[in-house]
Length: 367
Image 1 (tube, rainbow, N blue to C red):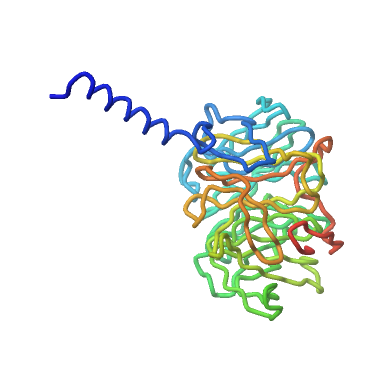
Image 2 (cartoon, rainbow, N blue to C red; image 1 turned 90 degrees about the vertical axis):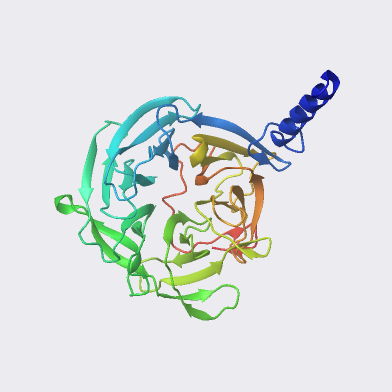
């Protein structure tokens, strides 16, 4: 039997171990830790809604899609689109059928586009934040790639959408499509990038054939070009002049600490003054990341999701070499990322010209 002194020693030891497990090296509570020069705070939490994923902004509001554990084929359940003020307080909500994955605000119309069911049985809901009205649209069935549709990007050259979860990968199927219309409640589409399209490898300068199996996220680079993140393929494809005869595709392989790495969302910084919003899907939390002295305009930030080699980080992405350098670690599953320029409520990283008017990326490249 333990003596009282021995028992006390055991208890003290256990407490010390638990405290050590629950704190970082700096003594802060366990959780995301930002590198020196950055400050991370909580912007909002889900409350009754859960599993936040995508985030977008516009009109002085932030919009977040909560998936509520809905299956990706839309066979059951609903998702919740939440509108926040810039102070993180809820101002409005909408319910959409199935699983919301792509969420973007069209800067040309002010309408909110929410794609549903990225694996199969895809659909689209367009919401007018001013009136609250929402309209549902279908996609032609079956989809040419066998899967669903995911992320969206808006440029003056058109509206583009990811053909996600291809079940016929390698069969010359669309990876990115341009929306041609919404007549009759059906989304018209035309392909601008295939799973096996040719691209210039930025590391070698040589032409290569893509072999995409996991088209996932779309974003606009600092130079106004379209970019596709192919998550499981561990690549980013930069698409200049998308959908035109002069379209040029370039590809870079992503790595962190010298090893191949997966990415989810990316965001290009458009202003020194502003902040990043990071959605941690599994903790039901949206974080706000600021930088001392302001961000470097033109720099790209990306996140590595749960299950990737260095999962749970947000870092700067060198768009020429594909190298990811973490600036925040300790997220559980970061899935949404957005740069919000302070004082520019039109927001989001969408709506650029896409005309190739590049500016230098602070990590070493023109996009």
